[in-house]
Amino acid sequence: MTARGAVLGVDVGGTGIKARLTADDGRLLGEQRVPTPRDDPAAEALAVVVAELAVHARSVARQHGVALDAVGLVVPGVVDEDGGRSVLSVNLGWQDVPVRQRVAAALRATGTDVPLAFGHDVRAGALAEVQAGGLDHGTVAFVPVGTGLASALVVDGRVVSGDGWAGEIGQVRIAHGPHAGLRVEEIASAGAVAHRSDAPTAHAAMLRVQDGELLARQVWDDCVDVLADALAWLTAAAGCHTLVIGGGLAQSGPLLLDPPHRGAERPAGGRPGPGPRRRTTR
Image: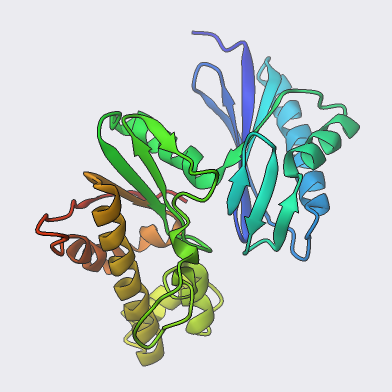
C-alpha cells in the first residue's frame, strides 16, 4: 500500500508534549518530544508550540512524498470535546480555556490550514488500547499513571464521557488515613512520587527505591497503596473485566504493577477483581 497522506497526533502532558506523524498506511514517519509550556493559563504558548510541531511535521511529510492532512490534539483534565475547551486541568493551570480555538488560530498563522481534532488524552488512549487489544466487548478501564492520575472507561467499544468528568479518579479526595484530605493523584502519580521523594523525576525516585533509600521506599509504598485502593473501587464501581495500566510510571514494571494487581484482586462485594493488562505506554 502507498501512503496518500499523513496525520500528526499531539499528546499534551503535564510535563511534556509527544508528537507522532503517521502515514495513512500506518507507517511512522517521525516523532518529537518537547516540554509543555509552564505558566501558560490561557494556552497561548501551547498553541505556538503545537503550530511549530505541525510545521515540522508538514516538512517531514513532504520528504516522504505525502501531505499533512490533519492534526489530532489531546489534553489532560476535564475536557469539553464538543466545545473544544479545557474545563479544568489542574496540572496545567487551565480553567475554561478554548484550547481548540487557540491552536487552530496558531496553525492558520503558520499556513497549516488543516482539520484539527480535539479530545481528552486518557479517553483517546483508552480507545487506542481497546482497538489494539481487541477489547471491544465488556467494560475496560484505562489508567495511565503519569504526571497526574486519571482513568477512562470503555463499555462495549464506546467511551463513557460523563460530560467530561467520568474517570477523574485522581481528583477524588482521600477520606481516611495519613493522607486524608489530599487528592488521590497527590500521592499516586509520577509527579507526586518525584515531588514527595525530593527526586528530579519519578524514574530517579524508582532507582532510589531499588537502592534501598528509606524516604523513596516510603513514598513509593504510599503511591502503590493509594493506587491499589483506587483500582479496587474503580473496578467495583464500574464492573471492569480488564484494567490497562499505562503512563510513564508503568515502565517500572513489577515494582509498581504487582502490588496494585494484588489490591485490585481484593474482594469487592464478594466478586474478585480483574488483573491488569500491563502496558509501558509513555
